[in-house]
Length: 372
Ligand code: GLY
Image (cartoon, rainbow, N blue to C red; front, side, top):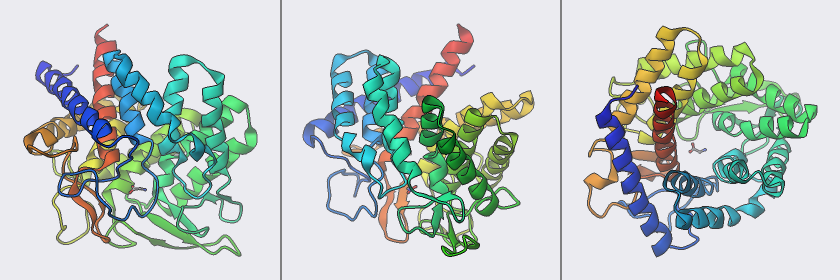
């Protein structure tokens, strides 16, 4: 159950999202922003890596389904087509982020196998990053680098394995999850952003970070990627160790985060440059809703559901919604992309907007199906 005023605010956020996204794609056609600068999407800042081009299309697919408006549907297809060639992109580890919110959704609404083929090819391409020695999918940075973020992309390999009946792909996805669990998830449930391996032997060398504070600290967005990634791995495999890891990382997130639900960029950094990393909160909210549906203990399920609701309630306030700042072009404010590089600090970020709408959509759909 969710309260009527939360439902009303969530619906209001979708109306605001329609306004913001219509402006973005009308004013800057075929443009894929990453983060705002002083609240504006179009600027010339460095992007570091190309990983975000599925989130705009993903929001368009959510709006197309919610509104039934053919204009949103046409735009969703258009922005999906713009990334079709990326199914062969072996230079990034983010093909799940590109194709799960777009082409997989497109396949699910049409049942068109030609559309599904694009998703399956993307899964096979991502599997090409597998390092036999070390047993992990390497990050875009280097073959010796494993990122926690990849946990959120490995779903596309599990999906391709399932749909193609391909045991080799399944083994790759499984091994990647076990390696991440072993070397990036710590005993207290916190996670490291990156692990470095010796390429000649496959031996694990050390934990490291790019977007967090230190190699031994806890980057909040990485923690959110871990919760979402391990709960998804559990859904595909029913491997209980993945559920246990999702629970451990979720509990750590709750323990370290203020009660309103919004973490800083890194919990260990003294003091953080900006108070909030709202995209981590949005990602975590969606993951907590999923986790609440997978745990068998009703008390635990209620705890995760309540934390997700509290987080979304906070993100729906004028402090966080772009609607509270006239002229702001994003949907959700107070996100951080890359604090060390000074990219997108205290700004809207494209994936933050996407995961925020996706979590709100999930909350509303769950509420509708439980009251039906
Ligand atoms: N891998 C992208 C990020 O979380 O910034």
